[in-house]
Image 1: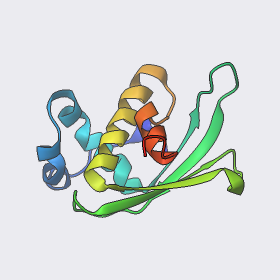
Image 2 (image 1 turned 180 degrees about the vertical axis):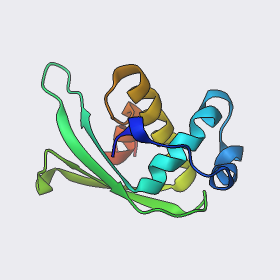
Image 3 (image 1 turned 90 degrees about the horizontal axis):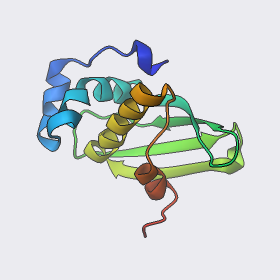
Length: 124
């Protein structure tokens, strides 16, 4: 599944999440919800001074913004490089909006620095 081939989600599904986002993020919401509903994403993480590391992210899907999503990421096909984070759906969808913006400007599917900080629990 590629971000390029995503179709906007059903407006009924999008409208449930719309109050959580403003401006540019709200405009990207139909694609972010569509990506969220797929339940997984393959991409690569750029490493400064090194090669990119491929990852597979998978998550549980629910229709309510306040429900929890558990996202699991595995890097380089290595079970020892697996991480998990649990977030409210609206917060996770916000990170997926960032993925879409990053993809549009760089042609690479990757999460934001803020997502990785959560995933690796660097702010706790």
